[in-house]
Image (tube, rainbow, N blue to C red; front, side, top):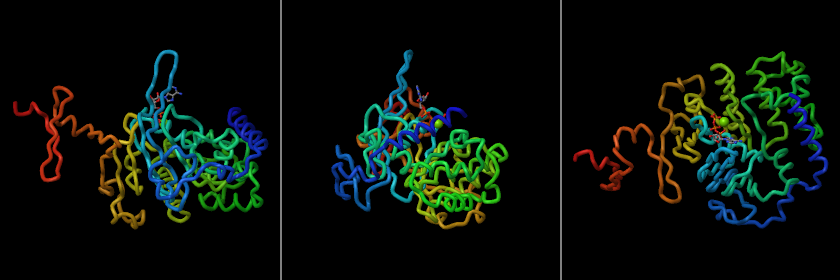
Amino acid sequence: MGKTVKKEKEINREAETAEVKEGSAESMSAMTSDMANEATDNDLITGENSPMVLAENLVKIYKTSELEVLALQGLDLRVERGELTAIIGNSGSGKSTFLNMLGGLDEPSAGKLFVDGKNLFKLTPKEKVIYKRDTVGFVWQNNGRNLLPFMNAMENIMMPMHLTSEKNKKERALELLDLVGMSHRKFSRMNQLSGGEQQRIAIAIALANKPKLLLADEPTGSVDRKTADYIFDLFKRLNKEYNQTIIIVTHDVELSKKVARVVAIRDGKISSERILKEHYSNIGNGEINWMEEETQDEYTIVDRAGRIQIPRNMLDSLELKDNKIKVTIDDSIIKLENPQKNI
Ligand SMILES: Nc1ncnc2c1ncn2[C@@H]1O[C@H](COP(=O)(O)OP(=O)(O)OP(=O)(O)O)[C@@H](O)[C@H]1O
Ligand SMILES: [Mg+2]
């Protein structure tokens, strides 16, 4: 807990001393929107069609005295403004590493990352403080990182606003409490709330400074199924009604079936994507059983070098003796075969 308080104070102090105002990135060079598909060495990508997130060939190596861990191995991802994207993947696949980079909490070993047009790795320390305060909101699985237990719900939500020039802090906090369905508990302290209720307050806090990008790392990891459903539906509502761009990391394959887009990370790289079928995009939550229906189409991702990751179950079914596969094309259908199968 002491840690959280210290963090808040540190941010406060840094923000007070930060003389750089929003838009300081204007001094950086700009690039036209039609070039926004591909980042160059520029510091800023602009224009209506510029993506909210553009990651190019991100690499992260963690070095400790005993070993080196390759957490991200050339990750590419583009997220449009107003998208709700879930990131899914096995433990250790690099999900949190990527989310922390988006949140301005970590730096890559190589690669590029643009958020809201800004090249994150070219921000000055002052600009980064402002980025963390104004551009991104973060919700963690362990909401102790978001919440101050000795304050009530309302005070917790107003906390990040003290770092900004927001004039109507109380009104904004009440609005957010209403949005997350917690108005009736505004004077409750955190230890008087359930895990799911605390998580709803954590979402309100993350939204307090109207971030352009809301990031959530396993927000339903510590709550039961019913609460997890409620929280996912809340993210969906925020996305639909307020056009909030959201990226949620989750382990929960079933919950991710509700989302318009799910990207899968395998070994530090995006391996596949699932997109919600048209038919399901306008269906109300109560109308179908999300867990049982095949709501999404799945696609494998081809990287810039033409590499794909073959789904593990398909690869296993080939029963390869070594690492060689026979690749043929027949009427625009590419076939992968075990070259030794019929020997
Ligand atoms: N600070 C660190 N120092 C050394 N290795 C690290 C560090 N942080 C993460 N790693 C390693 O990097 C890899 C990716 O970790 P990451 O936390 O991104 O995984 P994850 O997909 O979020 O997993 P989980 O689902 O368990 O949260 C793992 O092998 C992890 O052990
Ligand atoms: Mg993680």
